[in-house]
Each structure stands twice: as structure tokens, then as C-alpha cells.
Image 1 (cartoon, rainbow, N blue to C red):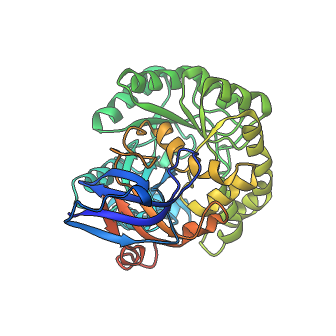
Image 2: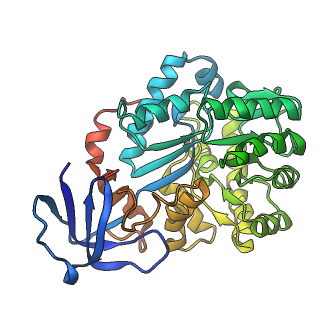
Length: 406
């Protein structure tokens, strides 16, 4: 793979620093080897590919910190897919989802729940070059109480000892982090209510301790303050959703340095497109009622100074997520930080990805336009680089079937 020189670009480096106009960026051996102003460029290296990219913006590849690749943007009901599809079908869908994610400029995915160890298998396939896709961090399966939220894809436990064993076995299988289900959810009904705490503090602590003991991160599905506070007491690093967050709990999250992945686009898109995607009528109705209130809840986290990270869940969309973060009070630059360097910090991979710095992996996107003035410029991706290898989004999409929901 030849070295690559990109010339005449505006660089948004993902750290929150002001953009660098009329700049160059050099990639060698899959890593960023030089960044600077065009006036400082020494073009004497030779043997490199050159892209003249005046009018384009280069950013770090986007990080989706909440995804389910094996049922990303599926059509039908959760029961149809998880209980109805074979493991092989789920894996094929996951492979297509890898291509779709990369085509949208997502170069890192935290897959936060799959059936069995499917997301670990996808991670390994991408890592060894068998599959084209984003780098993947995988949990294997979430940990839930018996019959708890998402039990169909979870390791079910009913005591601290069982939670500890589940975490140990998942980590042994290759999990990069541990996820626990602390509450019910909006996308379920019956006894699975979003306001109910499920796993206990002691059960979560046992699982989280095992992850932290070997330097791995932890996260939790949680909506109500009781569940979020229980998870914080148990030592969690990150909260998914936080759909019923209150001001006091948001302030506690900020004080403890706990990240929030609000997944705002999931409910919003379910409300808007759920019926045509085969979601049950009750779920569409719940989403339509809940989606507007979710922004007000999210604003509590923004006011408290909670560290916000992008993630879209199985039905959401990355650029839509970023629009909604801005609707909730983040600036355009802070929204980009949430999708790049802060997300990398949350995932504990900021030493290699998340910002444009010499020595880091060349995970980059080239877009037409300026996302600081119109975040929808991120829909106009001309190139995606993953570890320095270039892809045209249209070429990636051409390899995907029509039912992956791109």
C-alpha cells in the first residue's frame, strides 16, 4: 500500500481545536505520518499517491458506540429476527452491516449485544482481514437477570456469583467490555418496564469487578435514576440510553466521570419509520409519545456536563444522531468530538483512534462541505480510510443486499 498525500483540505482533528484550513495530511503504513499547512509541505518523498482535495474536509472516522451489527436496521419484529433467524442468517446480516457501517464513515463500532458470541466472531473476521468493516469492540452478550430486558440475547444470572461467572466466561471468550442490563426498556412491554430496576447493585458490581480487574471497560443499559445510581455504585464506566434521567443523577454522572450514550435517533426513527420497517404498532406508538420527551431528558445531562458519546442502537442513524445531539444543546464542534475523540476515550482506544494526530491509525473520512456549518455534510462522504486503506462509499454499498437498511 503506497503512502498517501491529501492536499488542500480543511482538517477537523476531532479534539475540539479550531479547523486547520489549506492543510495537508500524509498517511504511511496505515498511520498518520504528517499533518500541517500547505505552506509547510515538503513534496520530496516520492512513491506516494496524491489526492488534490480542495474544498473538502477531513475528519477522524466516526465512532458508533452503541450498535447491534447482527440485527442492524432489521425489518420485522425483534422476535422475528432474534428467535426466527438462524445463527448463520444473523452472521450474514452482520457481515453486510459491517460494510454498511463503513460506507457511512463509521470506522469503529462498539457492538453492544448479539446472540451468542456472534459479535466477537465478527470482530475477529474483520481483524484478520476475512471481512471488510470497521474495527469492532464486542461484549459477546450482555448480562441480564432471568427474563430481563433483552433476555433473548443475554447471559441470564440471578446472583452475584452467577454474574461474576458470566463475566469471566465472556472475557475468556474475547469480550472487550462487559455490559449489564440494569433496567427494563422502552422497546419491550409486559413485565419489562423501562422504569423498573432489574439487576441488583451487587450483581453488577461482581461483573464489573471482573472487567476492571483486567483493564476492561463496562457499560449498562439503564433508564430510571434508581438503575443508573445502582450501576454507578457498582462502578460502571458508561450508561446507555438514560431515558428517564433526572437532574440529580445527571450531576452524579458528571461528578463520577461516567459517559452517556443517549441513542436519541433510535426512538425518533422508530416513531417516524417503524411501521414501514415492520415494527409492532404498540412500539411505534410508544416511540411517538416518548421521542420528544427524550430530548428534554437529554438536556439534563448536557446542563450537568455529562460526557456525551454517539451511538445509534439497532435502528438509528449516525448523522441523525448528531443532529439530535445538537437539538439537545451540543455545539457542532462538541457533537463531532462526541463522535470521535470522546467516543475513543469512552472505549479506551484513544491512544490509537479518534483524532487526527501523527502516529495514530489512519481512520479518516473525506467529506464535501463543512460539517460545522451543516452537519449533513457528513452524508457526502467521498472517501473512507480504515487503517490507511481507501474505500469509496458507493463501492462498499454495491456489495450489500437491499435488506440491510442502508
